Amino acid sequence: MTASPFRIVHLGVGNFHRAHQAFYTQKANAAAGEAWRITGVSLRRPDTRDALAPQGFRYTVEINAPDETRYETISVLDDILVASEDPSSVVAAIADPRTALVTLTVTEKGYHLRPSDRRLDLDDPKIAADMTAEVPTTTIGILAEGLARRMAEGAGPLTVLSCDNLPENGAVLEAAILAFAGERRAGLGQWIATHAAFPSSMVDRIVPATSEELKARVRQATGQNDAWPVATEDFSEWVIEDRFAGPRPLWEMAGARLVPDVRPYEMRKLRMLNGAHSALAYAGTLAGKTFVHEAIADEDLAGLARAVMTESGETLPEEVRVASGEYAEALIKRFSNGALNHRLRQIAMDGSQKLPARLVAPLNERVGKGLESPGLERAIASWIAFLGRDFRDGEPVDDPLAERLKAHWSSADGFVSFARAVLTEPAVFSDLAARRPEVAERLAAHAEAIFAA
Image (cartoon, rainbow, N blue to C red; front, side):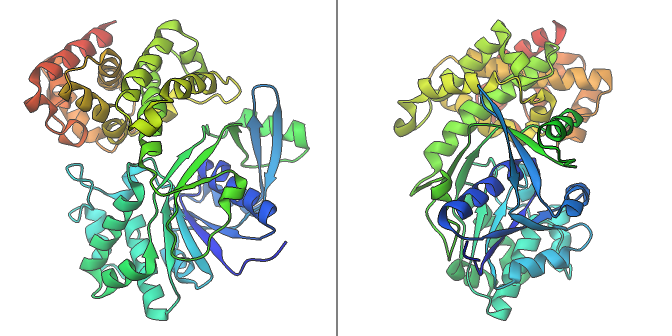
């Protein structure tokens, strides 16, 4: 195998990255006879580094196919930095001339966007603090500072590849970086526009959280005492906009697809897979289910998932809409994989940031065309009822808007009052309540019925 002079820095080295981009990179290395390496970055906690460092950052992936379970060792990671401990080390890794790519899985909230226009929120306290910090600590700030160092040191071009579930994630990330750079350092924005590329990508693989049961299965199957293995399904997909500033692994040799436009594929995934997942997470949790495979085995909940997929599928671009029925059936089979134990609560977190692209956007399009959308409306109403149940029962709500949503609960005169207040949240629903009050009233009434059931 030929050692590559280049490497990847990955921000957000969680389970998904380890079962997806790292997996693809190792497979591409094997197919192409290259040796790309990945330096991972944990943005907040040292858990993953502390677990993997004693085993040389190698780990096991458990792949659950319908007819077999197999185990593979991934060894492409060579280090994990922890940004909260030493952000300067992350900046230095990005600025290193050997780094040809930075990839990201930092979730939607890691971008610090304004809900109104999906542009960088320069008034966000963390972003504002980064503007004057010697070493920034946010994802956007660290990336911009790394690019500034590359400019100053003549380190060469860089590709920054978002792998997060955001529509047009590359363009959104580029705009955020340019906005930050323009405020922080003269000339940096122009250099970035000339020397950096921000391709969009769509990623798809179901990856649940690591459990003690998984560790025990890996130990029994492999004889290895892996401190942080990861489980996943046999299916995986990666569609990447073919726009790079320099060298890259030959991911297509591992099954990735390089295309001129990712948008149809990311819309299909967000609206059909992620939308149905969110619907199952909220309605399924309210129905007493714990895992996705339990929810999809319930006839009523499976009907909800199918309705969301059908309604959302009808809003897709023609090139992917024609096969949306087959795609939906494949999703139902994937959701039924009981070996994954994918927790509904894991999917349910950060609902206020997930719903706009997954459920609200297709609903708005259908409302504009005069089409009924009982599945999408029930899914959205289930989220509101889910919030109400958790607030009523004193459960923690894992959501960036948790305090605002809880304030609505505390000041509400009954559940319908709470639901109406939530439906006016611009970050989630934009102006839906003002523009289509009859839809908002119907959603509030539906949420009340679910909450009371």
